[in-house]
Length: 173
Image 1: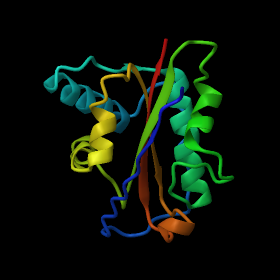
Image 2: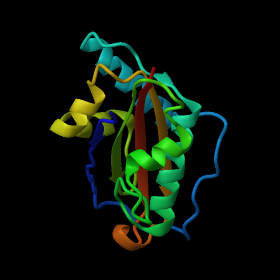
Image 3: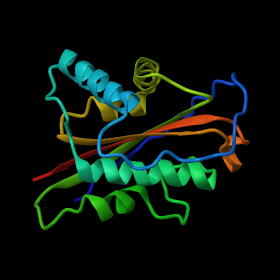
Image 4: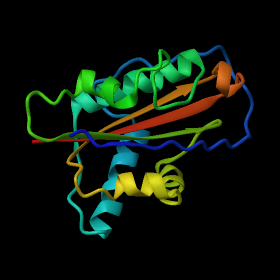
């Protein structure tokens, strides 16, 4: 049985000026300093609660990156894809159950204008009961982390400079 836990939070810090035309950061082989900081801080919080640290998953990171980029380019903020596909189906494309007995995924989202640091992102998530539950869920074993910074994000973001963070949690066994 797939347990679907979806949470979203919007953090809009309405400061900073709108910059040059939008461009989504190209895919990278390594985590950015923001992504690495989110992972480190998240695992510190899990350790404080005597939970196992989450291992970085390339597949979950691809799922998170694709979603962050799509939200930035298409100007929406939601767990579902722009075409309405449920988040767990979208993540399953990258992180499939593969015939395993147990499979589950979860997701935390955050956006900020113009930027946000790892500590601030984790403070916002930990202040939200749903996000906190995802971070402290003892089932999770793997995570994908993505951040995208866009100078002028359309639609929902109103042309503002934004940073979007997606964390995709998973377990398969």
